[in-house]
Length: 129
Image (cartoon, rainbow, N blue to C red; front, side, top):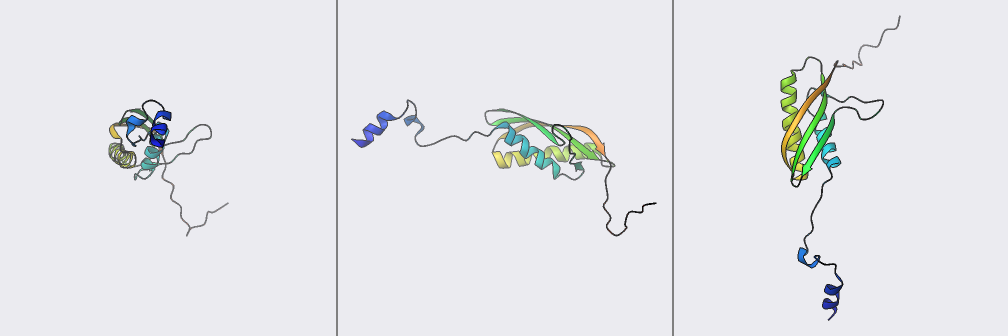
């Protein structure tokens, strides 16, 4: 009798789920995963911004279990653009799929800027004249 009362109190359609739920991944989560994955690619630089968001910056368009990504990056000087873009595309697609389960249709990589590679040397102090 108690089970019948619980079923009667459930909203319509809830009993049809059969105890299973669904996971919804917001596009901002997918974008953040793509941005972090891009920073781990050799040749991609992280560029801070004074206003707004820096680079890398991702935009995701999700439809069901599929996603398309637009990614803007900064590349270090002297690195081959085509290779860095291809490596970034592969790394981002793999990481987004692994962490979210979404099928990545495309990753469009746009190189917005080229930055000098800053080498930090601790053995040679800076000379001030």
